[in-house]
Amino acid sequence: KRLIIINGPNLNLLGKREPTIYGSLSFTDYLENLRKTFSDIQIDYFQSNIEGELIDKLHEVGFSYDGVILNAAAYTHTSVGLGDAVKAIETKVVEVHISNTFGREAFRHQSYISPNASGVILGFGMQSYELAIQSFL
Ligand code: DQA
Image 1 (cartoon, rainbow, N blue to C red):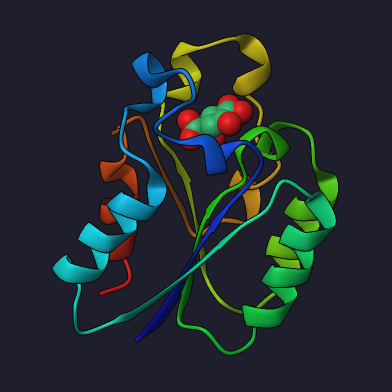
Image 2 (image 1 turned 30 degrees about the vertical axis):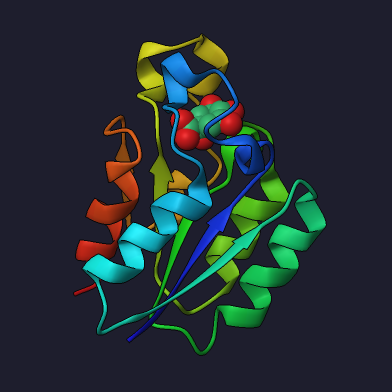
């Protein structure tokens, strides 16, 4: 199986950014653990702070990969374009958030990704990604 984790804006700062909300582990360290745990599947990784690059990546993988794990971060709540891209591709997309967005500010309760995602996992810290991967096994 071939999966890809796509992380949106500011998630390159994981480990440094608001550690009380997002934890103190960097994503590269976490990814190393993930790849060890799921050693029989290919887990690619892409992160960008640029909306169009995230859309381009969805187009690139969206007709050949077995699954996308997408944390669109702040673009979740603002991007019609990303929502449309999720709808346009064939590969199933699981939406992920580290924090419980429903327990936070009202503007985080809205998602342009959810209506077109095959499922949503949020609020389990970094473990949210692991749970999303399991959904593709
Ligand atoms: C986030 C939640 C978003 O509201 C926020 O903008 C992020 C991270 C999460 O993983 O909890 O950057 O997607």
